[in-house]
Image (cartoon, rainbow, N blue to C red):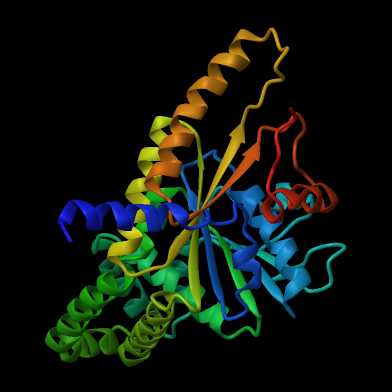
Length: 336
């Protein structure tokens, strides 16, 4: 058999494969999932999608926690009720809870919660002097909080792409930070204790180091789970435009390099003008979106590609979100 014949047979076999269902039913059906990340470029509908997905999961699982790690925090606006850094039940859904947290602020609280004022100040200066360690330690505090809670599945409404990708490097950043702090503590601890003792200050550097070591242990364990496709998946949200498609590809490549499962893409805000429409703007946008949608299908043949229409109304409030969730579970059929 020649290489050409073999290639043709393989292509025919591939062509015979049925396309993957264009819904997120695969996520809802995978009962082993514990961590679900929803991410993408800013302004593409991450919060709406993550909220809708969480309401669907609440029908399948015993308990669901929806967390926003985006400093802009839109969960409160989406559901029309106030959420904070403690989980609150979503009105109308008994087993769905939501919370909004700022990972960077968590490191400040962690430092201020220590015993020694002088050591806290120095640890704060050291922590914020290491690039990225503030977010890394904040993320660790978030993970520590989440792991102490008993939820069947946790959905993350993440910050825009760049912030999300930095999360993946946090275990390495923490390792570097702990190494520096350990070196600092070993060199100057005796002198520091003597000086602060003379000044009547209380320090407990062991307490701070134990906190950091505990965070590192948690982050390493969470990172191991993140790399387990049975426990974790990432859902990419995009719109059918060049920049969004480019960022989605960059994110998928980055996720793959960190061994994080990703096999779902939601393409939002698609325009389907009626055939008798005289709207030139609609026609031009539809043509442009169709071009990039074809590229998405070519690039991600082994992905579930979910297509969502541009709606004429805002998706706000629990009932509106539940209505919108229909598009995630059922293939959208444009009006003929």
